[in-house]
Length: 106
Image (tube, rainbow, N blue to C red; front, side, top):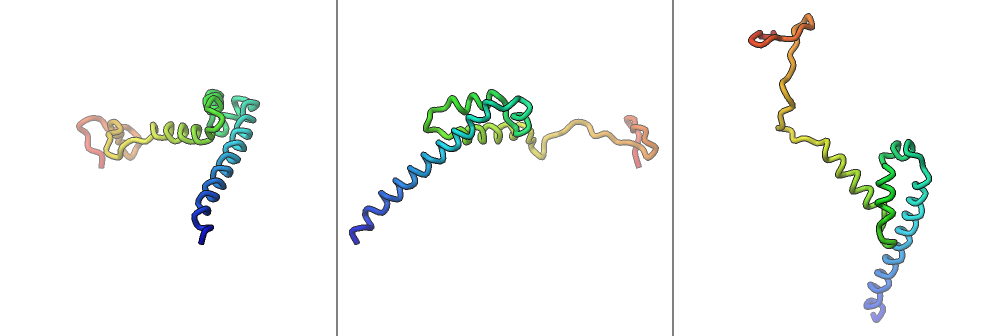
């Protein structure tokens, strides 16, 4: 029964080592993006400033979390509430001519 008290310590130590290794690997792989062209970065949804900003984080910070958060937030700007008006709807007659004000389209 004496081993149960030390088990959480070893589990935490193992988790810390695994996280440190994951951050090291992510940072190493992310640093390779500095050599990519702007077109290649655009293909994966990044800009050169995204790469610079992510690599400017402290060595213990995972750069992928910063980029993922930035991509999610940039996607939020395109979302509009369902009840927001999108402008005046355009109605067309069967012949293709636009409906003029006061005219009823059937």
